[in-house]
Length: 536
Image 1 (spheres, rainbow, N blue to C red):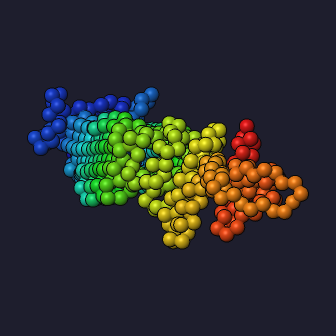
Image 2: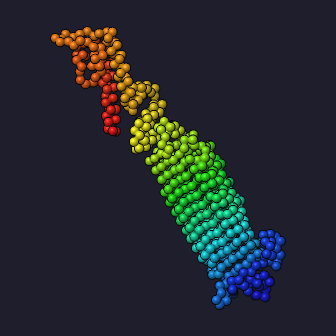
Image 3: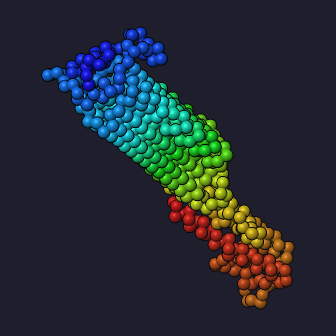
């Protein structure tokens, strides 16, 4: 390039480059924020930048060459596709007429801070250092698919504007350090990070994402070595999709506001998190929240959360494996809460906020907190939208027995038998009612004592009024209606009454009924006493 053809701003940049000095074309009063008012005194052709970055001018001895430019209007296309750039590029407060093209280039550190760009194409780019886009306003989308940044990717305060399209296309992006999309980072259009890898933390703190017709954040199979922050005022209109993502630290959605009505607001199916997930302290979701099939090494917290999806599933923990679930939202879950086939070591909930509709079949847990009575917990089990399912009752009874509350466990199993009876045909219902009334389906064996006492009183009265005839015998004991009735009802042994007296007619039938009832009820009482002694 002929130096004589350079304009004064371009000549200043050309001369500053070998020493890495900065050239400031701004007025110093912030007027670079309005590029429409800039004149040619602030214009620099993109081809001048390309020539410098491609090594047309060598660094001065002992100096590090760099392009450092502030407040310039970049004319033409900054095209560095497939280039080998060994010097830093730092543009601050600049305005681009055309989107820079860095695709498949090998770059040193790149700083485009507080700039205005009609797009940025950096697919497959390798940046040996930081990629700094802080405070820039970019329309038309940022393409970072397949790119590799060895340092930090800083998009703090960036405005991405591409409604209906990809605001950020970063499929398979690799960043060795942290990614910052925080402090009023905004995106109109889809933010895509599927298959991306982040070696440090991913920070969307205070970000605002807007793509109501689809995914606001599409990050399936994302891998983050440390923590993920979508908190501090994070909002998303559109689906936040973290399906199959892996997080090496914790995931914070504290206070996040997610809105995707009648659809999925948060899709975290098959998510893997090493420690905790916080959907708490004002977390609000208009639409379904799903952690189906996920694995969380610590706690999943919904403390003081707001979950709303009235027409469908508000919360799905189906097949989730987690150490602890803190399910104590700010108010009752509005919609179905699906906990089917989840494996939870500790489930902490609040009866005041139980969803009206639940799915609990296959749910496994070790401990429930608070330790409610069986009758209170049965209200929880009976909210299952699938109707009677045996497993939730069995699991609840086992939970009570494991902490020594066998009576509460029996209450649950009795309720199970009664609720199952509602699904039977009429003949089986009649048998069930009889079993329930006599011995509480075997879970109230000592109820038989009441029946024994009643029948003993009944027999004493009947045989007192109608003494049975005596049999021929040399020695006959005097008749005692009480002892005679008791002798009939004893399944084993004899009191010396039954063998000497033989009722006839209807009283023979009464005696037979007493014998049969004594056998059945006696064995029931004996079985109940055996279980009670074994528990002691």
